[in-house]
Amino acid sequence: MQSQRGALLAAALIFTGVMASDAQAQRRDSDWIDLGCQTVSFRVDRDVLRVGRRDGRFSAIRLHARGGDVEMLDLKVVYGNGQPDDISVRRILRRGDRTHALDLRGGERVIDRIEMVYRAVPNFRGREAVVCVEGLAYAAAPPPPPPPSAGAWLELGCKQVSLFGRDRDTVPVGRHEGRFKAIRLHVRGADVEMLDLKVVYANGEPDDIPVRHFIRQGERTRSLDLRGWERSINRVDMVYRTVPNFKGLARVCVEGLQ
Image (cartoon, rainbow, N blue to C red):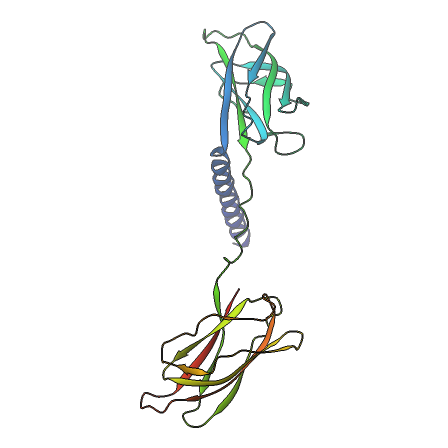
C-alpha cells in the first residue's frame, strides 16, 4: 500500500512538472519573433539573413526547419556594432524541429545580420528545405514608479480640540525623510479660533507661523509657507479653542505640501 501511494505521488509530481514546463514554454513562445527565412539547396549553401532591427534587442535566437531536413554547418550572428558571434550549432535539424535557445554573447543585443552555412538533406518528398530564424525579444524591466508629484498635500496628523477654553496640542510629524514647503490647517466638526501656531524643524529650530483667525468648519487655511522652503518637520505646536456651538467637538488637521 505504501509503495502504491509513493508511485501515485511520483506520478502526480511528474504530471505537475510537465504542465508547468508546457506553460512556461507557451509563455516563452509568445516572446519569439520571426526574423526571416532562407531556402536551402542540396549543395553546401551560404546565406545571409538581414535583420537590421536597430530598434529591437534580442537575448537569444533559435532555428526552425521547414519542408525538409537541414544539416547546419556554421552559424554566425553579427551585431549592430559589427561585432561577430560564432554560435555552436553544427547538427542535423529535422523537418519541423526547432533548436534550443541559442544565447547571444553579452546578453541583450541588436542584430544586424545572421550568416548561415548549411545544406538540405536529400529526401524523396520533393520539398525544399527552409530554415527560419527566430529572435527572443528582450523584455526590459518595467520603469520604476514615478516619485510623488510636486505639489502633493499630505495629511501629517490631526488633533481634537476641547469643547471649552484654550487648548494646546502638538502634532508629531518626525518625517525626517520628508521635506515640505508649506503647511495648511483643515478644520472639521466645528469652528475653531487659532491663537498660535509654531512649526519645529528636525534640527530643533522653531518657526512661528502668523495664523491668528477663525477657521470655519470644513474650511482650510491658505498655504502657510515655511521659512527656508523645503524643511523636515519634527512637530507642529498649536494653541486654539473651539467656538461654542451645538454641533460637537472640532478637529484640526495639519497638511504638508511636498
